[in-house]
Image (cartoon, rainbow, N blue to C red; front, side):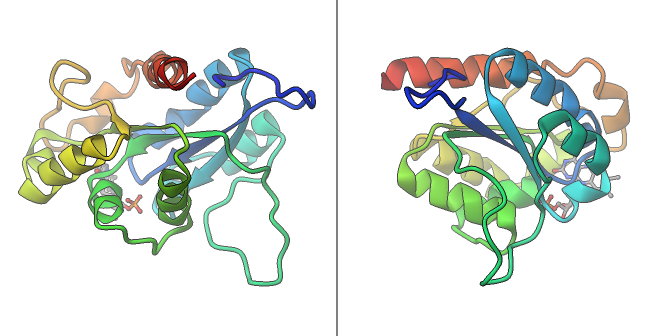
Length: 190
Ligand SMILES: Cc1cc2nc3c(=O)[nH]c(=O)nc-3n(C[C@H](O)[C@H](O)[C@H](O)COP(=O)(O)O)c2cc1C
C-alpha cells in the first residue's frame, strides 16, 4: 500500500477526486506528488469540478482519461481499479451527499462503493467559514470520520477562509498533507 508495486509488478492505483472549487485548478500538484510516491494516479472530477481542471494537462500527466460521468452500460471500464482514493478538494455539497449515501455523480458512486470495499479514503474539505458552519456539513464530516474515512478538516488542519476569498488561499494549500495521511492509514491497516 501507499504507492508500492503489487507482486504482479503494476503500481498501486490512486484515484484523486476533485470537486467544484477553484482549488481543483491545482490538483495537478497532488498528482505530481502522488506519482513521486509511486502511485499510478487517475483523476476523477465531479461535473462542477470539471469546470475548474485542465483536463488535457491531467490526461497527459496521468496517462489515463479524466472521468466525470458514469459510463454507458455497455462501455468498458477505462480506468484500472483503485487501491485508495483522495477527495481533494471535497466540496460541502459532495460531503453532504456522500454522508447521505447519495450516488448521483460518478465521484460519489466511486466513493460510496470504495467505502463499502474498505479502501483507504482521505477527504479534504475546502470551503469558506460560512458554508462550513452549516449543521448538515458539520454532521456529514463527523459521520464520515466515524465510518473510518480520514477527513482532514478543522482550523488546526486548514484554516477556513472568509466567503469570497477562496482564490487567495489556493497557493498555500498543503498538497502533501493528504498523501501523508494516506500513508498513515495504510500503515495502520497493514
Ligand atoms: C467560483 C466558485 C467557487 C466555489 N468554491 C467552492 C469551494 O471552495 N468549496 C465548496 O464547498 N463549494 C464551492 N463552490 C460551490 C460548489 O461548486 C457547488 O456547491 C457545486 O454544486 C459542487 O458540486 P460538486 O460537489 O458535485 O463538485 C464554488 C462555486 C463556484 C461557482
